[in-house]
Image 1 (cartoon, chains in turn cyan, brown):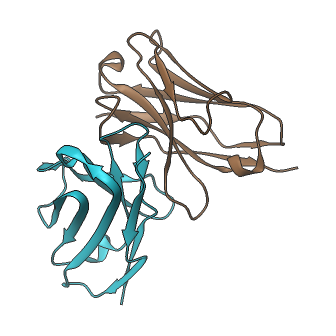
Image 2 (cartoon, one colour; image 1 turned 90 degrees about the vertical axis):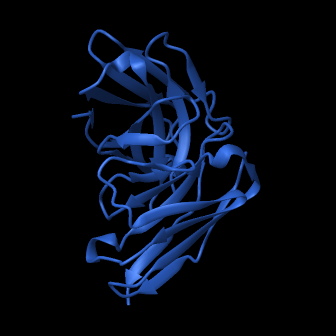
Length: 108
Length: 119
């Protein structure tokens, strides 16, 4: 199975900053079949962006995904208070679907 | 509006079984897959398996195969996950999730069902 490693474990930033979250796979994820989710305490994960260009309904364009092969990035620009949460990457190139261990984005 | 509504929290003892339901609405049940994902406290999500409601075919993660079964009842637009021989390590929140394909992003999640396994 594809193992996804996210970094950093915790990211401390202020509203208005830009967040850069990394997701590295131990083997190539073809066709950028990777998704990013946001999770707040006590809630289910919420799909943000997926694939090369996909964005879930209602997700602002401040959230952008990039990368290919084994290295992927989620960039969140102009951080707003509601963006502080845990973020997970997930690959859907190969079965089984796998997730990273998460990056916690906290207010500095 | 797409909704997936799961059954309530469960408290079980080691060796017990648990069955969680997931009723969907707002879309055609047979047009997408239902995946099951769990999340242990403080951990990332873990994919457990899926069912194709159209034909009932199910696929399971190797780690849990033999203890899990996933089914779908198209007459009531409801999917089920049955997990047997429970271990303390099965303590987690279990989610049903819609996916367009067997391999896809997961676009709509149930609210989660907390399963606690303790002697």
